[in-house]
Figure 1 (cartoon, protein in one colour):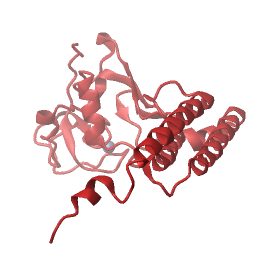
Figure 2 (tube, helix red, strand yellow):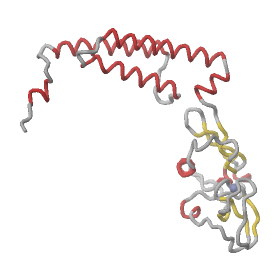
Figure 3 (cartoon, protein in one colour):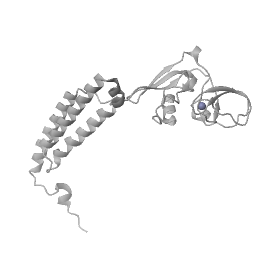
Figure 4 (cartoon, protein in one colour):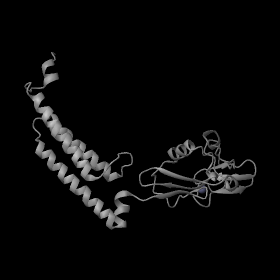
Length: 229
Ligand SMILES: [Zn+2]
């Protein structure tokens, strides 16, 4: 088998195609900048889902005519106009209707209230508890009793509100060493936290206890250390 190196590097295009690429790329670059300016989006850090869809579709349409000789620049520009119009229409819808806003942008959800996970309010599996606990640990949270509330914003970020030192209550430890000690059997009496929802209960030594909030049976000894940053 012999490799056609000329084809690898130049496809079947004449050298003049390089000049064409320069022109095509400049046009698409300017068009992309203008479109994003018209969309009114200044930073890319916190994109809602449909803003991301806009960026991805624009990016895809912008790249193709830069170096595919069978894709015309005007076709890509048509995509730009349509995507931009759809985006502006969405913004209008969101500004006018709370329902449309919730549907398109998502809503903030309470993940924790009063040191306990809001199992019932939580959208299903939106945030796996492993990832969620690790994000809290990054904020130096040792156990859920340190938290007044945590809100999952529509951007996917967590807003965390703490109890003051005096208000900290016993809660579910989330440091791996302590959390891993979760067990179905309660060996000595004391205050325990449900490993699934953070519900705290005074338990005596028994074989098994079902959490009255989330109906699971695993418990961890609650701790009430203050948050030290
Ligand atoms: Zn529970």
